[in-house]
Image (cartoon, rainbow, N blue to C red; front, side, top):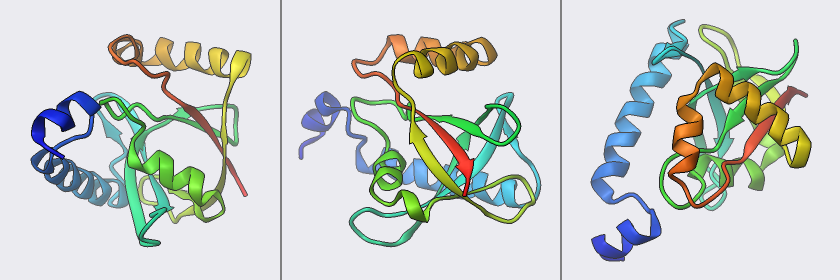
Amino acid sequence: MTQQQQRKSGTPGPISRWIQRKMNARMTRKIRRGQGSFMGMDVLILNTVGRLSGQPRQSPLAWFADGEDAWLIVASGGGGRHPDWHANLMAHPERASVEFPGRDAVPVRPHRLDGAERAQAWQRITAAQPRYAKYQVKSDREYPVIRLTPR
């Protein structure tokens, strides 16, 4: 795929992907050391398995409380397609877990929200972090909202 095709498809180029991997690795180390915020947002590590490779993957993500025992995450990721972690999570939901700052991994069950349930969650997310509403306006796709509950 040429660089022009990548820009049109919303697929990040090799340099952008390299930078993202480096930033994710750094943020993952910080979370595991007990530092769990970034740009004013609480951050967790989502552990998934690569849908094609079968290899473990870690993605630091902002999260939002959803009651006492559930967490919401948003598949924003910029560009014209859902982020890779979303595809991995949906392909192998039974292998997902989350890590909170300085804690061990907790196996989770993902559930993609739709309709009124998504709308209510989206309202809470954008009230807490208005930047998500700004990101969504710039995108041609609706960002998936995923509820994670302990297994």
